[in-house]
Amino acid sequence: MDNIDYFNISKMAHGALIEQFDAEFEKVLENISDPNTSDKAARTIQITFKIKPNKKRNSASIDFQTKSKLAPADPLTTEIFIGKDSNGRLVAEEYTGGIPGQMSIEDIETETDNDKVTMLNKNVK
Image 1: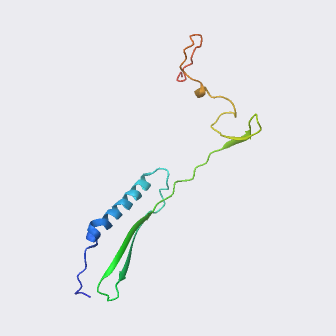
Image 2 (image 1 turned 180 degrees about the horizontal axis):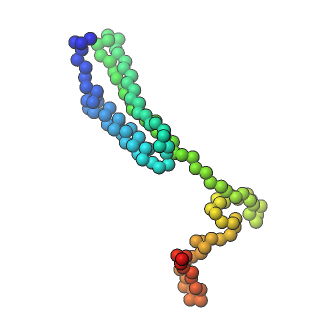
Image 3 (image 1 turned 120 degrees about the vertical axis):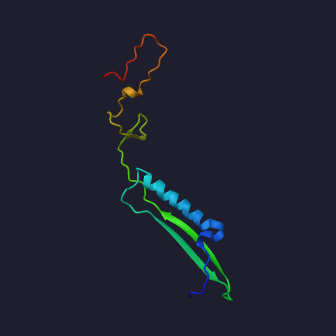
């Protein structure tokens, strides 16, 4: 087998294999740098070649594909309150730290045309 001249896979399909690998590698790097994914999960890139010879065995077609396996986003949790509105329909609202139904100071608009309303500064310490 020492007398076989192999072609360079980096030049396959005018460099398309390397372009596919580069695209998958970029996905892996983006996934690694995403703080919402595990820093412990391994990422993989798979290159698959499917080689089919013709009947005379003097040529073959080569299909190739690259694909990556990325770490999924870490699971997130939130809480919701479930109740009924005044019409009896079920409603759900995400719990954001306040008492259900109570307004937060952040919910109050800070701009007004009414000169009889004194606006409070939220940043006072």
